[in-house]
Image (tube, one colour):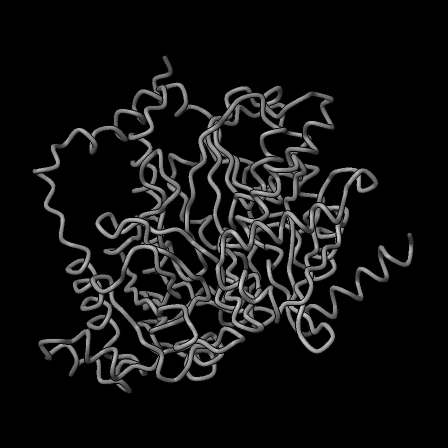
Length: 518
């Protein structure tokens, strides 16, 4: 039995052996109260803190209500134009104490092509602290001691950071790489040299070349890119499954996008079932993680540098483009209800204040503060009252895969004009032989699945949504499109709903690179 594995497993299991009655845990509401009070106290002497009188708020009995009344809601454009541009210019004490040294470049799926999200030293400490908590939660999964000796492959963006005079910019994984605990570096793959590689194809080639030399137990990354990597490894070594190369692979840690559309394709790459663990690590902070087995939900991190608010995701609070309205209602953790969809707002130790990060969530357990991600505020369709969420779309595709045994790892949907009314157009990416597929049957399955899942959609299909169109495409086209956008690999995801100019650009790409060549 490996000594190091025994030490790590014992350390991880120790907290789980402490009787629950000896663990003094504040209620979710009190954890959040304490978190906001600490954030306000830390930031009261910043430019933003002085503008909104954080010091005065702290002296009020109901400081949370004062905070919500005084500080406006922000999307990225608003907070950048009012505050964050000053931190990019090197100014200190703008929205958080000190000077911001790092900025994480987001994948830019919303209105900006690239978003610069400040990452402070306090945020890096918070991410590290939550990461360690998640490692300790593995005790609940009862893995053997030998498991803790295996390597962990983290497939992220380049760890190389670009210096721009006053700050470093790059992928969040690159920024956090310098904060990896020393004991973890023994397990970390693909290692520092390969992780710094900027060219995605070269990085994959290097990983494939070294894959046979690594004993990987855990893989971490976005499903689409990990699927591509595993397919390349299997092909390179002429084996049947990834377990022929990594026999001890037991866990896949994923996040950032629903895994449901990828599940069927992943199963074909494995020789046996593995454990799936979801995390919610965004550029804005480590928001939640799956803390126990036998659930698909994640537990919100309520006491580590993040204060949450929740906007009911409905027509009263958002317009048809996904922008929150001026009088949008916000709720705190004690006011939410299970099963309802909310847009997530956060204030953080990185200088985000009442900031809409663009994700929508549902509480599956209010008592445990557990959530699932349901989509994006701008990745939904509501042309005529159908209220079609990303959660509906993911489930419809998952059902299609089960009904037809056709894998559809990638898809996107557009709402378009059709005669005097509307239509939905689906673009499906599959590795299957297109000549063998019955597109009409696929279209009918998707349509019926959505009618079963969403009453509003079923009603609008009677009159307003006159047609459902489906185009089945080679899966590689989705990846090629991401490549020409400069969004290949890392944390980049293909948007599930494509609108306006992006839809036109996607259509032009398909005409040039596929349809006109057929």
